[in-house]
Image (cartoon, rainbow, N blue to C red; front, side):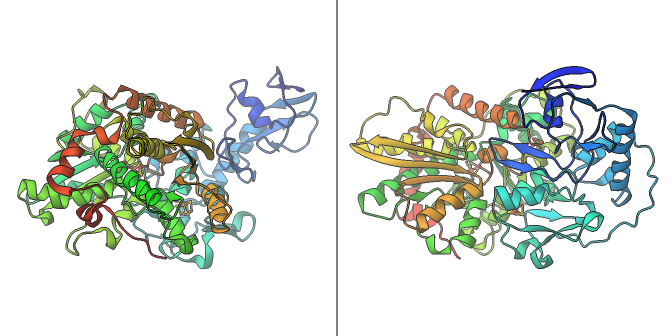
Length: 575
Ligand code: HC1
Ligand code: SF4
């Protein structure tokens, strides 16, 4: 152990701790811009480039970056000396000298770390005359907007994309203050292997990376008297939306969310959870079919669009192993534009389907042409993120936390506990097992929790005996972890039967469209805990017990994994 003092407070910390980490143990939060470290998720952006975290160390002439300097025996550190504060202020001024002064209208605005830091440090004027760079804004994709003019070269996006996701879209070109973060050959994002997972924008401290804003498109549909506007909400939205209105992470706001959507003027408020139950019916049937007919294993889940794009780009030789199930919100879109349009007697072209998702890749997914039933109308017309919904609620001056709980509309608003857990890593497979077990054994599953599939480990494994056979299961989140396992499958070195893969660390609760968690793992854990609370509180916890689903098969779809189900609920992949 190492003994030192920080601001005259004596403390003892393990060897190898940085000054930044040591200070946090005594509630001194030294500011940082580039630093990002999460042990469980293996994020580590430790390039000490922003120098905002500098501190004074007795006996040393130069200030030290606290994020990269390990503690030493007897060290005397001052984090709040005038010199340290002035140096930090100067660094922020320098960054601002080369930064657009458009804070008032910036999409990141209240969430921008640079703006917040300028305020906290009392930067009142910018004394450096910098030449502002003029890069083109990249609006080529349906998911992400890249404004390199707002980039402060912290390299967090690079770490997320290259190390955590192993997609490798970004790299730094040039040196020192001339550095710019570019895509390879400076290509627009739409022409790179970007999966649109949004993890880069989730950690970007400024407005350099933001989602494609579709709020006004929704307002337009809501104000069009010829459109019947239906909204659906993803499982993970209800456990995070409250944070946008100052509530504690892990608050469950399902009822208030539904109430706010009705206030906004949606004609029907449906639940993606209904479609998650439907996905389980299809995916569990597909799994059982493959098991009983000698089909190819492992089956890989297919509800995460960033993961789908990843395997299409990186593993084109394995396109026959992912499940053919569309993702739940796309299944819901298909049903609304077919079955439900018929029920209402409305032309599908006069129905606008809006999905509220924790994800920016869902915007790209909804625009994939093969997912539409006809060339004239998409199945899902508009996707907005959790953050965009929060903004609509604010724009409409709705006092969110005072809303009384309301219920989803019937029948596409009915769901079980199996559906809600889709929102966190491990949930899709746990839900699938609850149904597949009963399909394979014909017996009731008593204990519905599969604890081995829960938690934040990047790769979780379990062997689960069902009907006399052991099934090898893996649950993976983060695309880098997925690559590791996919390479084993490619090499014939893996014997899994079924694997769940989600692109974002934590699963959908950590999606790129969620309220910014600023790298705080505790927030993700609280959201996951809320998901499991919601599951426990549901009277039904197995997808096949959802009565609205049973009725849908009886009245319209026919058999699970049957002909009509195939036409509406399944898809195929292209390299
Ligand atoms: Fe997800 Fe899914 S769980 S992919 O994370 O399968 O986005 O929440 O809506 O479609 O249900 C996201 C979440 C979401 C789909 C479902
Ligand atoms: Fe990389 Fe994901 Fe960002 Fe695309 S969205 S650049 S894959 S981190």
